[in-house]
Amino acid sequence: MERYKEYKDSGVQWIGDIPSHWEIRRFKSFFSSANGNGFKIEYQGLAFGDYPFLKVSDLNGKSNNISIANNYVTEQMVKEESYNIIPANSILFSKIGEALKKNHRKINTVPCCIDNNCSAIVKRKKIAEEIDINFAYYLMKCVDMTWFDNGGTIPSVNMRKFMSSSFPLPPYSEQKKIVGYIESKTSKIDEYIAEKEKEVQLLNELKEAEIAKVVTQGLNPNVKMKDSGIPWIGMIPECWDMKRAKFMFNKNKRARRPEDEVITCFRDGQVTLRKNRRLTGFTESEKYDGYQGIRKGDLVIHQMDAFAGSIGVSDSDGMGTSVYHCCTPKGDYNVYYYAYLIRQMAMSGFIQSLYKGIRERSSDFSFPVFGNQYLIIPPRIEQNAIVTYINDKTAKVDSLITDLQAEIEHLKEYKQRLIADCVTGQVKVQNE
Image 1 (cartoon, rainbow, N blue to C red):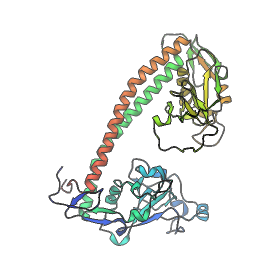
Image 2 (cartoon, rainbow, N blue to C red):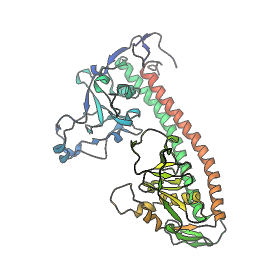
Image 3 (cartoon, rainbow, N blue to C red):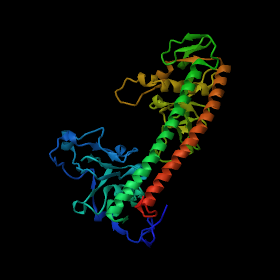
């Protein structure tokens, strides 16, 4: 793309050179800041239920804007807390924790309240045609909020430092053209990303459907079948047996060893050392009292998260919390086959249906509850064959998914680079 004819040094490291006719201004020249707590609600002629109440999680997602929310302000909330009313067309963002590093930024299209983990920058009334709110939003997407960290144990934004920071400002008419160009190009990128994400979803669904079929029906499509009497399984080969899980598996309670590292049972069925997947986003323990030893080859079931698929075979020695059931077979059973089978119990929704509590998206899959469930028992040679077949099939599908995900990440990076180049003047777009 074409560049501007003349540039000058912005004096700001993350911006670099800017077009010679652009300015460098501070955020506080155009915006005031607001946090979740601080001011009593001013009704502005609206009822309590007219104000969405937004949390950090509401600021995630693909859309640039927020127009509705899952929660609305109630009279009881007003009595218990003081909240800011954030006017429409403000830029909302996370000010604390791991979300600082992510793209938790939105423009609200209606007045709203925000919780204490959110902040907002509100456009000053006297500068109506000096800065376009959408241009400022795209600028904010290029700002790493960790640059303004307070330096505490938990990452948090020092708003005074942030509001004093500088940004590039083209003429207002040019801002509007830049915004239009960005929205035109990124909408096409988003459409392509959505297509790739649908392909990933379809491949995952096909993979899970094939696993569900072969773990419950075997590999021979011509074998004679019988009704298992188990709702989440249905028909099974006539020669297969059934037995309650408590007669098939022991729950181990091993002492942890000094050299043991933390193991996590993930929702995709992988059970591995935490460091093998990621180190951030976890609540770290300073003490490991109550942790148990986990050994390579253990069938691991997450008591509270099993409903979502946190079931698998550990690939390492290590330690984990007492919420894990670490099981070993009492007989000649292939633990990898039973990891696939019990994950199918979860994917079918059966584990969730066993939970008697009222909390949504949770379960309490205790070992006695697990132990009371009937499991099917193919001959050991068939268990082995099914595991080999699934591993071969899923390896091919996973390779396709990996390629698609790499393409999606490349498109996201390209989109972010495009936005950054446009709002900092590295490319000339006003004539597009």
